[in-house]
Amino acid sequence: MVSTIMTDPFAPSSPTTLLSSIKALQAILANCWPRILPNSPWLPEIINALVLCWLNVAEHDKPTPDHATISQELVNSAKILAAILEAVDGEDKEGKENFVAAVRLSDLVAPLVEKEGRLAGLFSASC
Image (cartoon, rainbow, N blue to C red; front, side, top):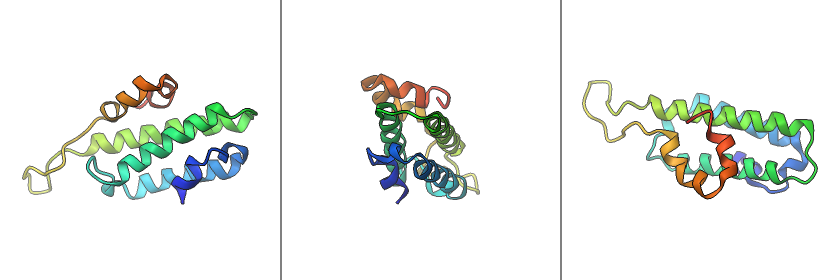
């Protein structure tokens, strides 16, 4: 549901709903971070939601002061995601090598930023 709201091109027309959705994503990141690994199916979904929301807010024809708050919360969400990905150390509790290695968010989003320069503002603080 969070992703559906954040990726809706008309979501910036209802900034309070969109901001609530972003806050819900931040709560999910804070509480479910062990499930958000570099090889999980949730990681691309989260990046997609952040990217589409950022672009939809940037393209909205009637920006309001709430849109600045929304943009800042999207940047905060990207920072949280970057911290989660860097926390993965590639080893389990017994010190055995795990199948998951730490990944930098900047490595994952570099091709996106290269294609769409407006995304640099979203990921610059987290990468």
